[in-house]
Length: 435
Image (cartoon, rainbow, N blue to C red):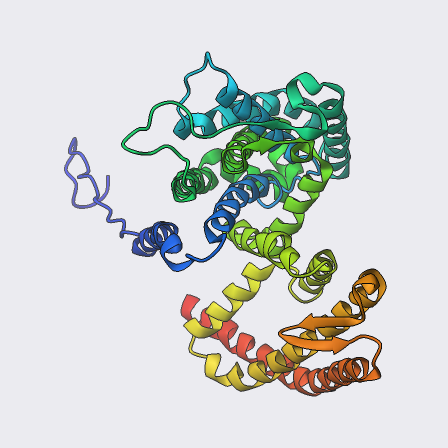
């Protein structure tokens, strides 16, 4: 018997105080405010349409990162679930006997995606690693071929069209104006993001991380790793279907491209650029993806080349994605060390941007010379006219690239050395704080 306790007496319950995670509430509130206020900031041209595309791609990217980032499952066929969800959603919109409100059409796509996740996931999750990736690649090719073989459901090469203005207006909401479609997508984006983040805090989400890191140990303690991957793929397919249905509402058309390997590869590319090791990485990747595929493609025929070069640069210099760079800089700012690296960082960035400008000039000149020669030898870049048959633009481009390379080679070593010192100081401060 412990001292201070009489025989037969009960220990008084201990009260534990859990502090309120104020920062998390601030982040979610800030995220909601950004979604609400974005149309007030971006008001010109097709800004609302671009914001809507970013929203649907964010949901798609987050659903994919449930597999890749949290579960280590490299899939080349995730577009199957978003695409099939989009087809079922658009048929639900066109079916006169179904009276599903447009606001809830996303659930039709989600349930359809989940259904195919149950069907296909049982086969694909039997294996992991490279085998899983190859099976998903075969699956997306199978579904894409089927989309051309069954035009009654898939609409053939022309796809299936719809009209999102259906039924009676509800409090004036018809989803005819793009602003109403944006807020519909923004609402589903917020709900889906909260739900997918909540999944990471569940026992299943924690076990999925364990399956990713050490599947042998997970099996040793009695868990079925295949079943964990299977359940995760089903949930991921649900959110992919939601994104597909919202895309169908936004564009009012779904085609075979929605279930193609190209779309699966695109989401893999954008999620990796954003950062698979961070929950918000796909959000960053979606913004970058829409910038290259929608905005930049309006101005340059070489947008795919730029996207490829950007991806190579991310893999080379930031293998953790853009989110890793952001978090590292925030870490430096948090510990009050940014002033030490500010000047050399600006020097490196200046040389890099100068080199990028020269690279863009060279690529655009070359593209015009080889692909658009029939339109004449003069090309307009940044408001200036250049003659591709003249030596001056080429010499200026070469000089810009040469100066940028020399400047980078001069400034980068000092910056990298200082960056290492700053991070060593931060690591030492963290160890002292832990001690």
